[in-house]
Length: 317
Image (cartoon, rainbow, N blue to C red):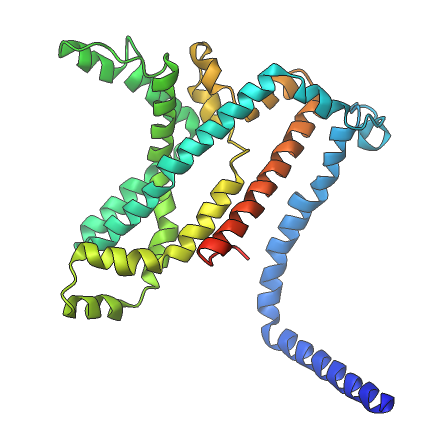
């Protein structure tokens, strides 16, 4: 009996090796192409993870990572004793939550609207106009925002004053600044985000729309019953990814749009790391905050994926 099992195992293993060789011989070009992104992630994503040990050391750039003395969790204790850390954490979560509520649905709505346009030249022109802001630097966008929305010299407030209305402090009052921040993000990113949803919409079977028309369904009914369910998996995956980024925030946008009058809402983790960690050369603190962000982001990602799988049966894995 043992000899029979051993012979069966040998046959199966040899067949598996042959099938692997066959796949490699047939599709070696695909494996070669796949090796490039794998090398990219290995070199620029995984190997630099060794630098995370800086968070547990009293890092000295002259001694290097390896020779710098260990300090354990002292950096994390110092961070959690900083009052400003909780302020920037609150601001980061709040701004990301507003982005999620306002900015996340924007490309979905745009993609559905573009999908309903039947005039091809207008559709292509609209797509081009909507995509362009994504390629503009936040430095340029910040200059445009100041030129348009400054309290005294901004074009919008000049028009309001000339109409007998009061100037709106878009950039100097915290509430108006948050609205401006979110609005600028929608303007820059919404058009680019439609690309993914338009690709998902292209995969919906056109016969479903024809059948719905035969049944007398209107345009809104087709959007609700065919279009949105057709892109539901894409929506859920992107939603989970966005929730996973709740604890992290880009540097350029809050840094460019911020000013001393709105620091209570504009200071976020990325600008805090720049001021406390980089400007002061406290690399241990900067790395510890980055590690904290990564751990919190991982918790959000796993939790949102778990809830999504339970509620909608859709998830990343």
